[in-house]
Length: 352
Ligand code: ADE
Image (cartoon, rainbow, N blue to C red; front, side, top):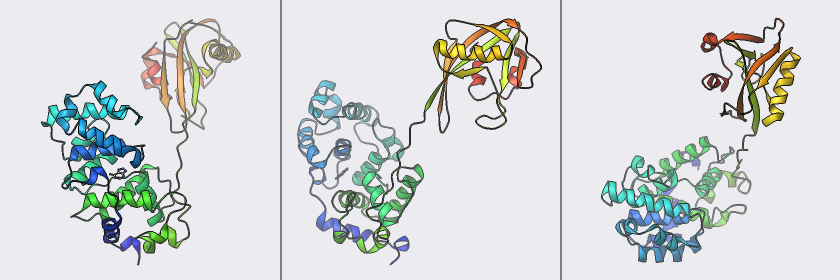
């Protein structure tokens, strides 16, 4: 059996019908979208067993949209007390008030409208739409990514946007027309009880016979997760030296970041150290420049692999003359728009 061509949803749903967990938010049919919403927000970053008593007491206190919308923020936070990540409660309260005001208390049933509610991301929107409204929408969280990485032997980083999209498409391809919500919850339960991290219980898995990672002996290796490293921030001091109506500009080297583009004189560093570094560089060109004490402004430029944090100072040529240099030019202000500026340097001209 080749999983890539197989429709395996009935294997999973049969297992779910006999092994699915009994949970307080699952005891109604059809499901109340408000209750699905509250439970999904509570279950973010929080274990099912921790959520159970909070969910029950919440529903006693705020049984519907109307009662939650009318509650004070203090009451809401008191009910949430101990669950942590309190912005979840504040966002939920605010979004429920929006539903009350804008939709007459009915949780909307389109992806666009649900997704626009505060605190509702793709996962929660998918859960509400599928569980309460029977729509064929995936709800992809870490558990679902792990299951699909194993089933389909996906060796790429599951935290990448591309893999998340691929998994959402695979979920929706398998999802049966008549039970989209049950399919999503079956995946949640499979991920929580069978297809668990590190040492999955493949011998008890309804999909064990068709799982590619298992066939290839890689069930404990997958999924691969690579957390994106935070781009390093480079602090740079920029000086804009003026002489009459002209400014001094420099062309970057022909290779590397922003190759051959024009910039104002700059050097790594901040404060007086940064200013001194730029002045030394200009002194090497035979130029003496006085620099203002306080900056004219600052700006940030984000590249894929680093962030430039520029602090910009105005300066004035006080002495010296530069020889003929291709890469260093005094240019009239009126010619500035025509220059190919190195990223953020183009914005500096509006600052000085
Ligand atoms: N984890 C997140 N959502 C869940 C749900 N609806 N049921 C069980 N576990 C969950």
